[in-house]
Structures are given as structure tokens and as C-alpha cells.
Amino acid sequence: MKTNLSIDIAVIISLFTVFFYTCGQTYLAAYMAVFYIDPVILNFSTTEKINWGFLNCANWLTYILFMALTLSFFLYVFALIDLKYPQNLFKTNKQRRPHIHNLNSTEEQRKNRIRVFFWIFFISILTVFAFITFANIDIKTSKSARKILKNSTSLPLIRVNDQYLFLIKCGSSLCAAIDKNKNVSLIEPKNVILVGSNFKNK
Image (cartoon, rainbow, N blue to C red; front, side, top):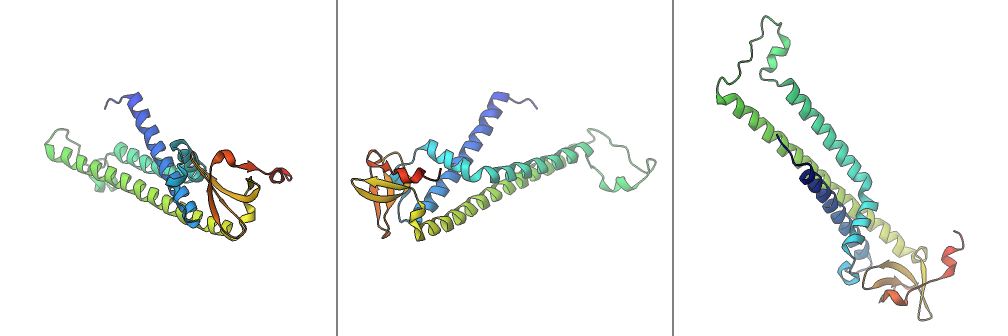
């Protein structure tokens, strides 16, 4: 079967981009939800979401690719052996029936059904694993954000109009910050000043 290399590469890159984008969106939504902030308000760019997705889901993508390679290996072995009569493996060469090509269309239809079934199974497994990845990121991020909420001083210290706050996240339009009393504020990025004490232990 002929394939167009440029189209194949474009499809693969698109799938990776969609995966990282969805993962980044899941991470930001789960993180900001703990502070009762809608990520849409901060207006995170697509690049930021892909970047957050890569930072949080690169290891999960490795697991998915390993599973894909494993399933592809089994598909390759299955096609290589071409088991028309599985019971023939346990027979001697004299007892095996010769394989007659193009005897009828039944055998070809059977192979097509097996091939379609395998690809449906293959795609379904990868899809389920992707959803498990997103669910795991959501749960893990929510737990991490709750710990930060309990100890907001672990966040970077900033100064906004002579008021000291702790930076939660910054988007393209606004930044979210919290004070020691757990009051959340939305401020413009240009007004955010990182305090020098953040770099004392660096």
C-alpha cells in the first residue's frame, strides 16, 4: 500500500499536538478550579496549553507509544505468520494442507474482518489509555493545587501596587494571585513585580 510520507508526518504531528493541547487544557482547568477561577478568564494561549501539556503528559505519552509499538509488533507477527489454519502448527509437514491462493473470496473476507477487528481494538485501547491519562492528570493536579492552597506561601511572591501577593498563574490577559487570607485577585500582567526574595536560595 502506497503512503504519502508528508501526509503521514502531518497526521502524526497533529495527533501529538491534539494530545498535548488536551492534556494542557485538562491540567489548567483542574489547577484553576481549586481556586474557583475559570481558565478562560486568564486567556491562556494555545502555545501555553501545549507547553503545559508537554510538561505534564510527556511521560504518559511514552507509555502510550510503548503500548502502540507492542500492539504493532503483534500485528506484524500475526501478518507474518498468516495463520490460516492454527491447528496446522501442531502437525507434521506431510499432514499439513497446502495453502491454495485465490481459491475463493471467503478467505480474503475473513482476513479483512480480522484486520478491521484488530485496528478497532488497537484504536480503542489507545483511546481508553488517553482518557485514563487525562483523568490521572486531573486528579493529580487537583491534589497538588489543594496543597498549594493550604500553603500559599510556597507560591512566588509578587508585589502589586505596594501589596504583596502570591502568584498562582499568568495567562495572556490576566494573572491570578492569592494573599495570606486566601483572597484571590485577578490583575494585569504589566502590574506584576516579582520580589527579589524569590531568588535568595537560587
